[in-house]
Image (tube, rainbow over all chains, first blue to last red; front, side, top):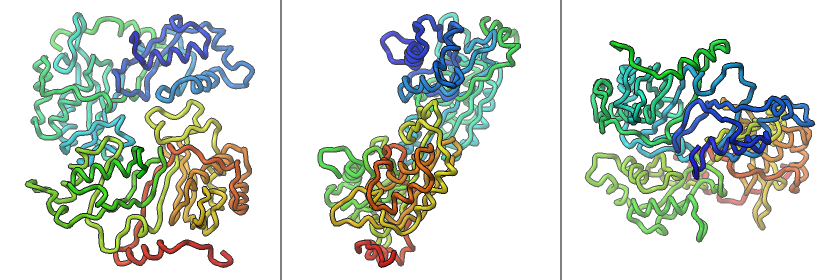
Amino acid sequence: MQPGRRTVAGTLLAGLGTVLQVPEEGLGLVVAGRTDAGVHATGQVAHVDLPPDRWAALPGRSDLAPAQALLRRLAGVLPGDVRVHRAAPAPAGFDARFSALRRRYAYRVCDDPAGVPPLRRHDVLAHRRPLDVAAMDAAAGRLVGLHDFAAFCKRRDGATTVRTLLEYGWTRDADGFAVARVVADAFCHSMVRALVGALLAVGDGRRPPAWPAEVLAGRVRDPGAAVVGPQGLTLVEVVYPDDALLAERAAQARAVRTLPAGG
Amino acid sequence: MQPGRRTVAGTLLAGLGTVLQVPEEGLGLVVAGRTDAGVHATGQVAHVDLPPDRWAALPGRSDLAPAQALLRRLAGVLPGDVRVHRAAPAPAGFDARFSALRRRYAYRVCDDPAGVPPLRRHDVLAHRRPLDVAAMDAAAGRLVGLHDFAAFCKRRDGATTVRTLLEYGWTRDADGFAVARVVADAFCHSMVRALVGALLAVGDGRRPPAWPAEVLAGRVRDPGAAVVGPQGLTLVEVVYPDDALLAERAAQARAVRTLPAGG
């Protein structure tokens, strides 16, 4: 939510308020991952708090299940750039943000000298130099693990930049785009886009393959690791533990992350 | 080209004029298939006429081939919604429009009750009722062949509506969309979109599978065969004969198509 600006959260809340006939501020919307302007999400997860009778009342006189009725009504009121693909009552202890075990992002880059195919220009970054994806993949692998990612994060007072990068790899997809797969328990602000910028410098030969790991070890931002544009980035998946572990995971994640001694 | 309106042809000509330093009106742009506003083309083909020295001069002081130099410069001057993916000197007798043997279109429809995924909303039509793609495919097959497609064409004085529909089939793609594959030697105006509209009526059960063939046989437009929106339609491929047959094919296609006696 950003006062005075159109956001996904604000648009979704307005739609939910209309369909559920509940005041928006009473819904308590919580999302798994915030997305900067221009970033996409195909696997975003959110939760809201409803009076139980609202859920049961959704089908009205139809023979649809409440979840189906909600999806159909939301499809009718939401604009074309915000869709809700699934809905369900949340299990006890579920928190869209804090119960999440990990988030997976994709970042797509087109290095065709002719430019990005027009229908993909909103979710693929154009890069003018050819990319060596195998070199990028090898260099990205060296960043995986529990580290202080200060070199790839916007500083925020009092916030830790320690994260566990679970996967970071580069491949070429069927469309010929270079695609990053980035998985972590959580990310700090602009982290994925800085991790991509650093690897583009390796891919087009401006920097050697060992350079991103050196930048990481330095723990200070390096101007060579540019934060790339938002349009290539998509939040693809949010993974949660089994229902029995949801509350425990949420309590754990709420605790401040700190770098273990010797980590 | 449409005076006072932004078109793909006008945008492309302006870019070519800039890069080639030739007056636009001297380029004689000819395209394989006109596309209505909102229709896409991933496989469009066009030709222009250049003084031979312009082609040879394209690399300037670079060591690029002329075609590569042209692609790079066009990528720099064209807006993001118009791209040129390949360029080559045309063989003798080549005419982008009249040498073409056949055109292939795709039409994509999303029948998910949640609506079209946002990143695909510009090239996929939303349909609110679930579609029986197998029934659509069977009914579409009955329209294949040499016919007078007046029932699916906008009338134009003096223009024949006789065409050979070479392929018309429906499948579901990996994204879950219903996709039409439509191939013909040539199409009359709005023909593909009317052929799609008729089959959507079969797919969602409003009409029986035999109905589109009955509409075709009637040779008059039927309000039940609505012309669907442009956004789902993409010109995917234009096929040409071997170089030796290009001029012959062009002469043949320039001749008015007429329905053979008993056809």
